[in-house]
Amino acid sequence: MALDLRIVIGRLLLAIGAQLVVYGLMSDGRAASMNIGWGSAIAVTGVVFHVLARMGKTA
Amino acid sequence: MGRLDLAPIDYSILLTYTLFVLGIGWILKEKTKTSDDFFHSGHGVPAWIAGLAFLSANLGAQEVMGMAASGAKYGIMTSHFYWVGAVPAMLFVGVFMMPFYYGSKARSVPEYLLLRFDEKTRGLNALSFAAMTIFSSGVSLYALGLLLSALLGWNFDASVLVAALIVLVYIFFGGLTSAIYNEVLQFFLIVAGFLPLVIAGLQDVGGWGGLVERLNGVAVKQGFAAGTYTQLWRHTGDPSQNPMGIEWIGLAMGLGFVLSFGYWCTDFLVVQRAMAAESMDAARRTPLIAALPKMVFPFLVIVPGLIAIALTLGGDAAFKLPAKPDGTLNYDMTIPMMLAHYFPPGLLGLGLTALMASFMSGMAGNVTAFNTVFTYDIYGAYIRPNASDSHYLKVGRLTTVAGIGASVLAAYAAVRFNNIMDLLQLVFAFVNAPLFATFLLGMFWKRATGHGAFCGLLLGTISAALHHALTLPAHSVPGLKGGWLGIVTRYPSEMAQNFWTAIWAFSVCFAATLLISLITRPRPDEELRGLVYSLTDKPKAEGRGWRPEVVAAGILAAVGAVNLYFW
Image 1 (tube, each protein chain N blue to C red):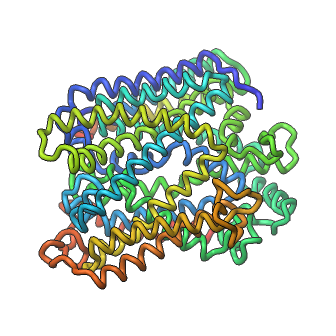
Image 2 (cartoon, rainbow over the protein chains, first blue to last red):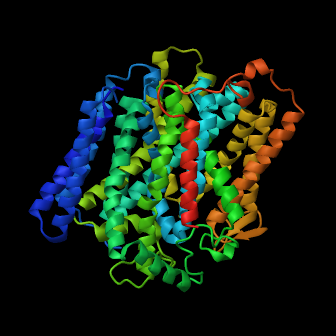
């Protein structure tokens, strides 16, 4: 396909997850724990998509 | 309900998504050079992407917010839309129907009808489908504007126009590829945005066991047996035993067979994604890949509704669904209220972004299906046949602009109605239910004729209208909801009326097509090869990989097990 979708998904999830983690680090209480926890999970999923794209040849 | 105040982080996440969407459209602009690129993604979509797009094209506003609302209103019986309806239908289209769609080289569902039957049947389907997609796209836009103005206090007109503009940009440049990319992104956003919601909600109510206990109390309070909100089939012996007001035969026939098969097997909006796949194998696997996540989606979109009603009617002081002016609960606000209740800033932005993505993606799916059907089956067939490829590409882009404009108008028309979602379901019963009978006979009975198909479709739709005109759901007044010619039957709910409307439309179309076909001349076998089951070589799996039939059997067994578990 014209663009490797795994890269696009990876970048979007990484961008959103990173923002949530940074915001969580600047917050406290429930906002901190939820944003850091879920933000990390989303960012890690984004990284996994990047790795998958690097490993595979085509999308 | 009170309005939400978004924090800068919420806007930042929303903006991130918007930039990605527009960026994809812009990058794909350079790669979209032919009409095949624009309308069919150059037939180069891998099965996993086509599968997720096939699933996500249906994850529009009605699905995400409507299923949560139905979960709150009807309980776990809403899962019948997935476990009796969508999944078996998706398996059927993958195993049995995709060889005809893909193998016939038709560019659209109406074009398959032209090859199998005749011009008038294609024309009728193209016109009704084009009208339905514009209407459906307008409803997505209307619901988005309504949500943003109610929840965030944004201006309705500005919300509608900005969303329409974003969708226009990425479809205009990237065509179907752009829509498919965004549908896949939307899928991941919905999972990322709704999974934390389900987990936070379940933690709040004491896990699944705690939720069942609370819902038992709610059911008894509503006059039903304990378990009505958490069991699928046990309370369907009589319509009065469950909040959906339907018995098992209406469910199995109306939803499980006619409406679901009608939608998933014949609606070009979803079928187009599989037809864009890179090979016959990929096309057949597309619906099967989609069926797997579809099976677990009730946990993401229906469980929030169950939690919401358990909290609202279970006496929880911290959460209440808002009431409408007539005093009934406003179920449509289930998802926004749950997001506001459980999510802090940051995750709230993600949840809202997932919702907006589903609105825009639902609209984009309709617009891409509309521009293909209009360009090939209306413009190319009746206005200017045999034009150059670049001409049709240009017309496709212009049709996108016109389709978006018509959707905006449809959104403003929708403002006039007070219950547009019910109306939309009804339109599906009018259009998709008889069409499924046409396809069933067309693909599996070589004796079916063009005259039979055309008359059957017309009579099926007329019978749906008549059924609607002579029946009325409980607590409704004659008019938009039915009974406009008189009241012969009253149904316990709108859902029950829709299911029976669909059964009528299907049955009349099936019988009429059958009878008229028997008295009209069939086409010779040679002309039907590749279009009818008995005259087509069965496709063999190419190279490595799994056989679609085996995978479908496995998924069917799994969905049967889920039905038994929640029996």
